[in-house]
Amino acid sequence: MSILSIGKTLHHEGLHITSIETSALSEQQDIESYKYIIINGGDGTIRRVLNQLHTLTDIPTFILNPTGSFNVVAKIHAAPKIEKVLDLLAKGETPKMQKHHLFRLNEELFLFSAGNMGDLQHIALSETLRFGCLKHGILKYILALLFLFPVHLIMTPFMLMSKTRFFIFTPARFIKKLGSFYGEVPSKITIDLDNDYNMLELDGDIVNVKGRHIEITQAGSVPVVTQ
Image 1: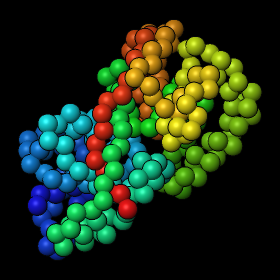
Image 2: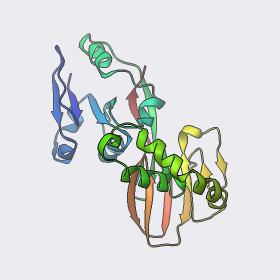
Image 3: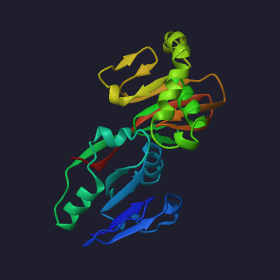
């Protein structure tokens, strides 16, 4: 059984695990030979890894080892402890799996969240606070939310009515659509941002997108180990 660990060196008696840095993924020539790929990191790391691997002919099963601040994707799938998964594999057992649906915004992949509303301002301020004792954990996100709460309270109703603003958050799929908020992604969403250069939030990352027109579509799914 071939296992690849991305972002952290892992060892387990009875298993052969190849470990590489995330930056070395593009240089890995034999990705499709691995049955399982462990992604060590938060939501942003998962997005960047899957952005490179989701079009493989033979998609491996992904094991999430959440080490980020929010780890939303891991929570969605109730990702078990990495030690528990490795113990199962060492015994020759197959862990339970779920499909995680992927979405594409122009050329960028995202997993559950995208937008240019309050989410963008929240992530931008949270990243500014990423230093010292706030570098790890969720405290920086809580502080940013408290700082921005009065602005969000006033501006959110206006942004929900704007044609150039949008926020997608698929864990809230019980709300299909409310103004410019989407709890699910239909076959296609087309938005005119009214600017040629835009900063957008994707799964907690801030990315720059060139072009005023964006198209958001479904992009298939990948298997993820669950409880």
